[in-house]
Amino acid sequence: MCQIPLLLVSQMLSQLYRNLFKSSPNHSEKFGADQIDLKISEMEQKISRLEEQNEELRKQLEYNRNKEAALQKVLCNYDNLLKKIITERNCKPQDDSTFHLANLEAAFYDLLRKYEKAKVVVHDFQQNETALKKQVIEYEDILENLRAKFVAYKSLSGKKIEKTGQLSLKKTKSCDNSKTKKRLMTTI
Image (cartoon, rainbow, N blue to C red; front, side, top):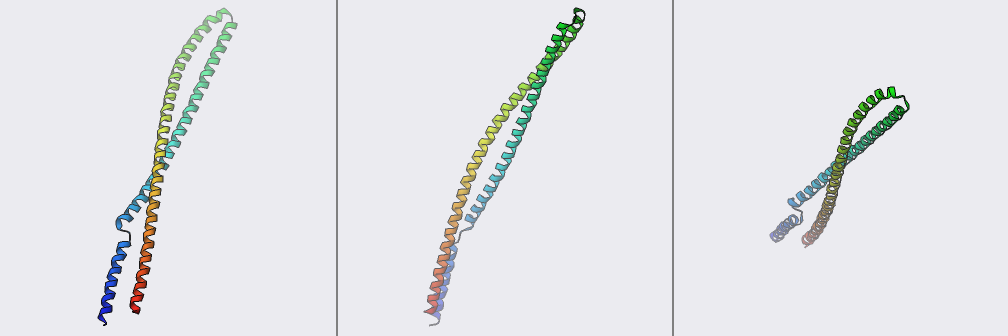
């Protein structure tokens, strides 16, 4: 009589042992959750790097705009100086005018050469500005895609966590049921 209850107890323990390992999450699910967490952290790092690059590009664009404004100011000053020299030339006598006219022509050609160089520089700045704007738009698109992926990974990980929680609740309930059965069996 003593061996029958021991046999039943050993069968119940082996069944509990099998049920316990069936209801626990396997290694691949834990690994998948770890992978999702890793991907989320990688995406957050990538987003922060893109935001830093975007800020650097904005600063560079502002610097280029300031430089262009400074060049425009220099050109205006040259223009005003040239006008002033011309008006002064017209007021002086003709003897000095030929000498001053030669100097004025030399200054004008010098100014014209500098103006052409400045014009090329301004044109290059405008091209750089359009390139920078395109890069900013591309980085914003990349950033938006990364944010969408982040939200997707976040919701997927939330679902996985919820599923794991439900599995652990089932495991707890099955353990509670098996403990109750064990008590009943020991009282019998």
